[in-house]
Image 1 (cartoon, rainbow, N blue to C red):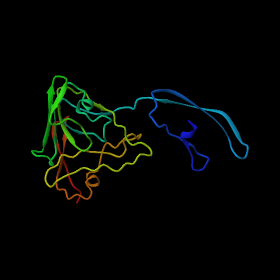
Image 2: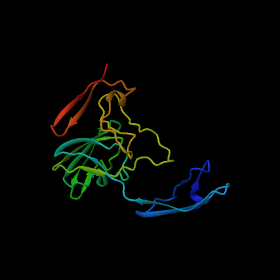
Image 3: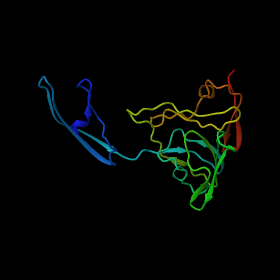
Image 4: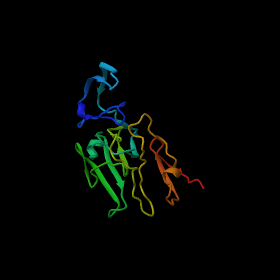
Length: 207
């Protein structure tokens, strides 16, 4: 793997495989000698590659208003929503005729005009139990180009998601300040939905 190791100062060295490593335990053994004759032999480092911990989105029986904080590894609706007790999924996209996209339960699948769950939309989900959504969110890869997420909105009502830049980090944002999140937008009113109490939440703008 020596040809895959890079350095800019001959002090810190980076190894980045060309392909994802298979799950399992790995041992990396390094021997090196610098121009001054200092030498290290058989320096061992061990690490384990395993599946990422999935992100959990809490759900309640009845209607839930949710969004993904980042793009899923597989955005197909039946890959994100595996709970067979989910009966209906809706999203509102004002850029399309009619605005609403819908998927309803048909046996083991959700079918309709909505076929994917992305971080660019929020979703109304109706389910008969309280099973949470558990989804694989890869986050950002080191060295990969990435930009902050952009959400298209129009004048009038929009159904917007709550996305974050901290997916894959130790701490993920669970509360977002509305004024900071909607900075630069001339917004008047926002609402959220509390699935536990089945009540709307008014979100006020700081004047």
